[in-house]
Image (cartoon, rainbow, N blue to C red; front, side, top):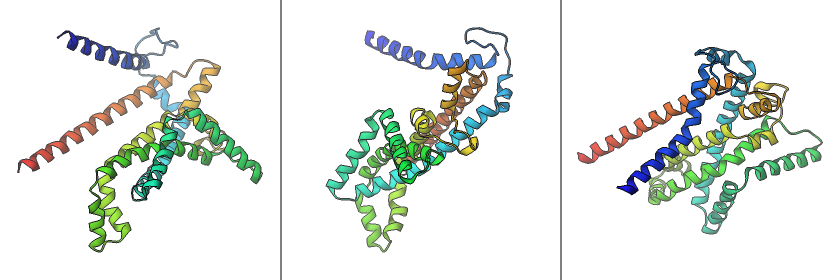
Length: 278
């Protein structure tokens, strides 16, 4: 009984420490007080002002665009890499596994600095300034591909290898067998890898700060994402009040997505139980 109380207290304390700052931020998104801790009256003004703040909207658009594009490409490359490594010889497969594990545990600053040195080196060879949307895209993809690989690999291991062989024996081409047999089996891993890739890109600051150049919605100026915009604002003064409403909207969207996914999974599990019952 004592252990149960201690365990539940620890869990609730941990949840409180995790979510109390978010709840405070949500509460202060309904006031125009400059400092968190001061209350100047309840208002919704920060929400319409958010969509009128061109600087934040550009940073948000850049963040979402780079996250979606880099996540899609990283998911394709990471998934194909996992499939290719799985059907390769053991020595080659072990080499790829090791190569994908290193970036996961490696410090992000090492990845960012290495990419910067590489882009500068190549730029000196071709006598051109390379930093742009494309260097930023490559940086985010390098960050995400190993995580996609790690998510897809277990699904390949769980898959019955005879399914692919049976499809080929029955006359399907290797590409058709891959699309019709392997892809549906590993789709949960592909989806989870895609979601992780998006999350990594949305949260990233170090790789973005080192590899960004001009492009996207910023035009000829350096690309600003939400993370780099907040860092720049902290240097000059207080963070724009509209960021409170933006973070509240993002948090509520994430909560809604998690609830919908949970409901979908529970419904699928219920369907599976009903099928087994019959």
